[in-house]
Length: 201
Ligand SMILES: [Zn+2]
Image (cartoon, rainbow, N blue to C red):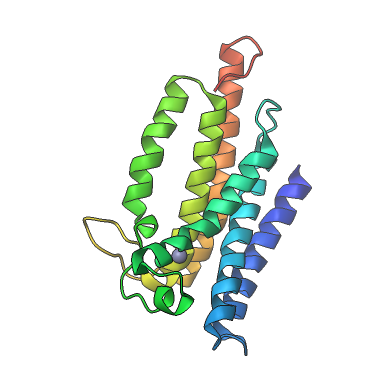
């Protein structure tokens, strides 16, 4: 597990750094279509690796890992669909020339969705809802933090933060899946002790 954790963290750092270079600074970056596709792939890859890192800490076999990894990967990339929704157009040109951000890029909205779900799953000890909620948290946080390195975080109604420093962006991208995985693992162990060997979350 330690090797897998190291490997996925290594891949996450490299995907983040190399992915941003390819999307924004490579010789193909002038192409809007290339940037859009490559950007979506990088978002999805970061979500994918974040969920894998999370699962290196947690081995509860009652949780369907594949579907949760898929959810995290899919949502990480799907968030950018709101460019098209906000532009009310199916054309990439309209979506990319939008001067405001779509609803799914609002960080407070995601907090309002995931926090009650998280509390509910903990109170009800519902491991599947808990895990899927954490996948949503990993998906939106990784996406918003990556976008936030260029445009800041949208904390409605407070407005936008300054663009995140590159080091902060990288630090948060790596830290969040590890912390969530670690904390969940500790929490499961405590509950396992309390419940006589059966893991309930
Ligand atoms: Zn985005």
